Picture 1 (spheres, rainbow, N blue to C red):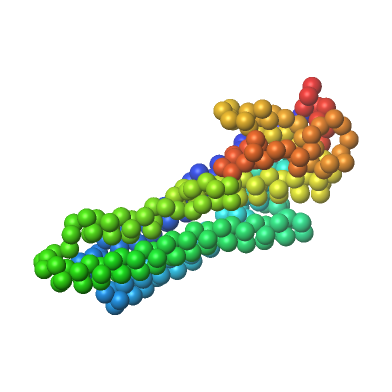
Picture 2: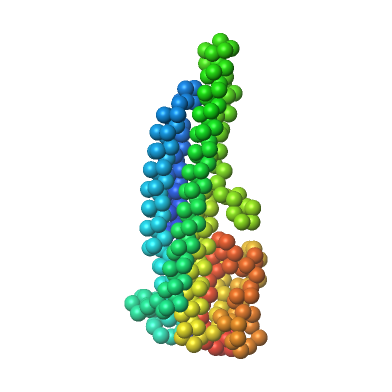
Length: 279
């Protein structure tokens, strides 16, 4: 009989990183709001860009440390759950004490860490690029407006001009990331999606690797009453290798737009004999 093993939840872990991004973006927004739009200069722009760069460097360091800690944790969870599911330990705590990354899992975890860090770095690089563009544009707009102000005899910049510059600066942070599918994400929402997706994928892959390494070639997809297309796969028995016997679908052939999609929380529990589960 397959033991009932609680699914791990990563909401708290992910919130730690999302909060760091929210805090950094608020700090950048505060730096931009302090700019004197009525008298922009190259020196002011350079000083602000230096402050923004420092904030993003600190954020990159914090996110890299988070990835180094929590992506391997997701792999450990998958391996420990598999050890218990296959009867090699009675509890998750016992399993965690004997967890060892096999070679394929070590390579997979290293790749997952690198991929996640690259995705998160793309977020800060995007913010950096857009802030630089916005400050360059605002600086040029301010200088042009001040030139024409002297010609027209106006004592202050037109309110519409200042409002437009403020909007330009605000959009540098609000626009966010456009993914490969053309979807637009706010930076902190994109970070949450990426990390949740990576942690779930790491858990599933380490589960498959550990199960196959222990001679178990089947798994069952978790259930949490999904309301999207995932619901059609909850509780499904799947093959963990394509050449495993039986009339079950191979996990690698399942459509990624329906199950194990971005933000998907479904995991897999290893089983040796699917017939016992069916009964």
